[in-house]
Image 1 (cartoon, rainbow, N blue to C red):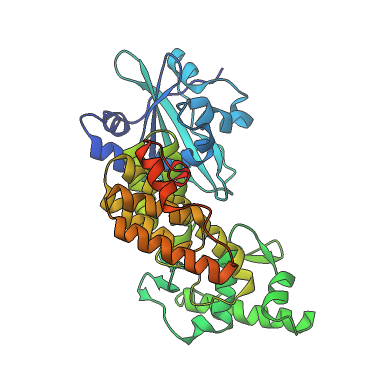
Image 2 (image 1 turned 90 degrees about the vertical axis):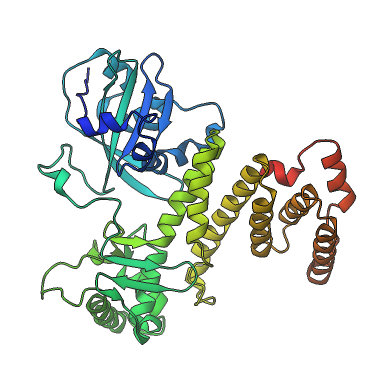
Amino acid sequence: MPAYGKLGRKERKLANRHAHPELFEGFVYGLAISRSEDGRIVDLNRKAREMLLPASAASGGEGLHCCDLICSRLEPIIGGGCMTEWVAKSATQLPEVRMDIQTETLRSAAWVTASQLGEDGSQVIFNLRPGRADDRRRRTPPGWASQADPGQRPDLQISTLGRFRVEGAAGPINGDWLGQRPGQLLKFLICERRRVVTSDQIGEVLWPEAGPQESSSRLRYNVHALRDKLEPKRERRSPARFVVARRGGYLVDTGNVWLDADRFEVDALAGIAARAQGMTEAAAVHLADAMNLYRGEFLAGDPYLDWAIPERERLHQLACRALRAQVGISVALGEFELAADQARRLAEMEPFDSDTQRLLIDVCLRQGRRSEAHRRFTLFSKKLQQEFGREPDFTLSDVEASLRAGDSSSALNRA
């Protein structure tokens, strides 16, 4: 039966979240605390929520268990059982074990250790050190603590939400190349960043008129040009860090690149899941950070790229889910001005969505802003009639009746 050794003094000190709430929340590795008696999770810091919560969103407000978040993901390695139970009964040390983490769309990993917490052993603390999804090692390499802080941004930072921007260690990497083939290649690889894209697939998208041999020649040239832009000081024949060749194709190594779209997705999913678990304060922080990153549509400067549309729509829908969750939290806290701002932003993103428009009107009426509610409803009715030849499926009286009855409207209930 596996046993888990004690964690470092720093982690154990930080686990006293009542005495050190800011340090516990901001610690660069994930920290999760469970009750020894039943494995129920009593606290997660920010990094742990980002890594673990999205997979548990469907469980609603029923509470979290270590087996849902950690043990089930480690089953291929440890063979089943509850880690909290094992830790509570053991005192011998076990090296870190690697855990794969698959959320709705993101794939990552973590190195996990666990230990009894407190003199009475009534709790267990899990330390989750971020790892790479393609790292197949089973033990921690010597000197890992001296590696770069995982909370810091890598040398290459790419912004795709709104204006496309690329920034290296020396500053912005601007130029006409962003709109030319090297830049298009980078954007396409970012769209497909969760898989290796074969040379043939890239050629079909960027050079559909060229034959296989010419397409392959163009691709090699543009890969070389792109790498020169991203790594101007890379020594000849040294391996590329950002655009890498793998299994007959290429991909952007997101382990070495900070991408705003991925950072947005992590916070949005963690916030939505935290809200489902009743962690209102934590959810509000994650969702605010996510929507601060969502400065516009994915690759907004290239609206007619067919291959960018699926990723643009996916991130758009996630942003709408995040905004609806924000509105729900703000209304529940009685922060109606903030809820109205969030609902207006959502209404701009979804101008023909009835639930969205009803949600905004609901918030306006809660504020006592009947004139704005009337204007919003009239404008929505006009636009819907002009574009689709139909009337809204609700009236102002319907929304007011729901408020008078003390019921949440269907739109607010789904927020």
